[in-house]
Amino acid sequence: MEYWEIYVKRIKKLCIQRGISINKLSAMSDVKQSTLDNIVRGQTKNPRVKTLHKIAIAFNMTLAEFLDFDELNEYSFDDNDTD
Image 1 (tube, rainbow, N blue to C red):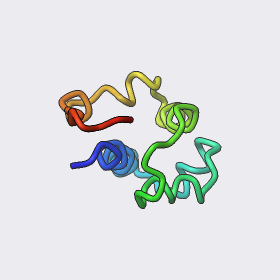
Image 2: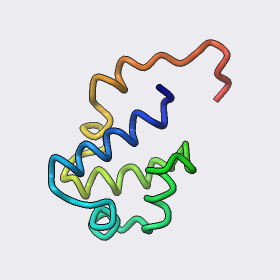
Image 3: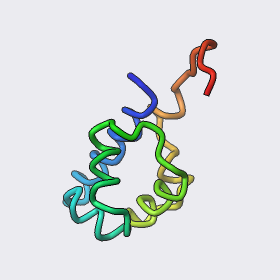
Image 4: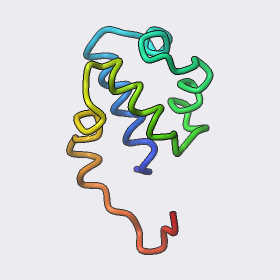
C-alpha cells in the first residue's frame, strides 16, 4: 500500500465511523470539495499539512491524533524514496 493510500483510508474510515460524507467533511473542515475529492481519489498524493490539520479538526482531533494509527506508524519508506 502506498503512503497516500493509508491516509485516504483513514479519512474514509473516520467518515464511516462518524456517519459523515466526504461532502459534509468538506463543509466541516473548510477544505474545498475539489481538494478533498482529489485527495480521496489519489490525484493529490501529498496534501499540505494545513489541509490535513483542517480535516483533523473537523473530526475533532489534533493533527497528531489524526496521524497516529497503526497502519501509518508501521509504514516503512523505501531506501530509494527521495521525497
